[in-house]
Image (cartoon, rainbow over all chains, first blue to last red; front, side, top):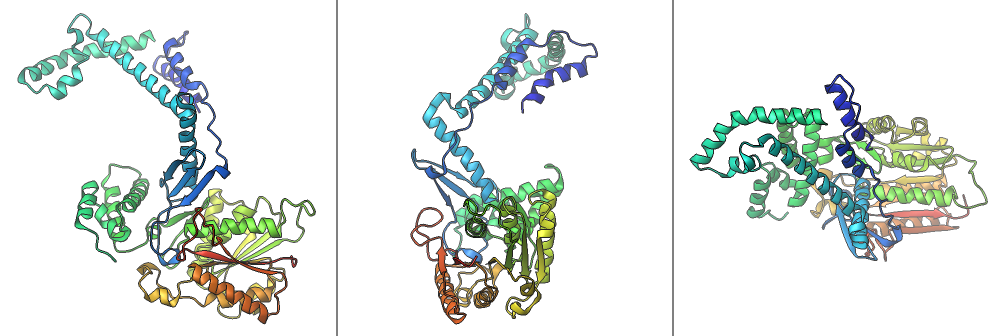
Length: 192
Length: 325
């Protein structure tokens, strides 16, 4: 599953730069290896512990009424966790999804931070944090010696600062800023 | 039908401008939201893109059709049934999720009682398994039974019977469609046949019965809206066909053919009990009471969701003969 993801940095760099790059990107590899590590297997839930209910709503059923409700509700009897799924029109498909959801929920209840769902969430958070950090570093480098921390507050300025002063500032800045940014991109690519 | 409060309609409009249209038929905002999501998914997939006006126009016309009472499955022209995808068309009744549950129960009964799977004394049944599905409609029961039983049975033949030529054509299309999709094995093309016959006439003399001498299973989900349900306002407008006469004919046919297992879907438990009583009467008439068990499933003390089933829920009547097969 992760193999194509793993290859993307090599593919992209070889496509963009005709000359081969001898050393791989160390920092990106470390981030990828984090994602590559297999998640703990999903908890197996015994059928005996489950109560499956097909939610039909009220009123007459059968051929009398054309119902499109395919919702499935699963109750895990030992823990009392309830999960409902109405994602697709297929009851069997909904049951499959509901089982996955239930397994994740029950595992989180039992193992807390060590559970599959928690680990997944944690990885996503770390990945986002490192991405943010990288982009912040990039813009800081680009802005280095000029405007200081202006780059970091760039977004905030454009949205919030409606005063004339602020407006003029960003307008004046934008043409000056763009070549710097491009330089930043290029340097980043070469460094990698 | 109770009026929908203006407040609910306004809420729906605020959520999506098309939602009040669907509310007319769905009656609850949650099911309307679900249907809108499914319609939108389909419109986008047909128009190949999200941004074009084409998808929006298509979606709007779909919602208009739905507000006029056209079933969602006819608009989308398919319905998932187990792992299968059943095409639906105007003029043929749409398969329901209840029937899906009943069919898988029937499949487990067949493998337990007729194929005797899991029992040591005969590992491979020598005689081919013969199933007849009366009033097949879209062919959903025949196809799902094949999908469920094919991995365990060497030889089988399933015959689907319906009076309507539209239904038979649709059932054949469904067979091809599901084989192409990969949800049915290739042998389904030769194992399953659909043919137009009238169940209400004496089918036992017709071609189906002549060929099916060693018939194992009769399964049927006939149109079962009783005359009183038809008139008392509990039936929606899209399914108004009054039928309560099929059971007598189907049961006499199965007694004539000496089927080992008969599975009949009924509209509610009252009808189920009526049909079960009819079974006993007919069994006496044909003097075939030996080893006959008539049961209504799901049992009265435990429904599909663990709680006792309500009287208005559909059920199946199972005629099971021990010793004969």
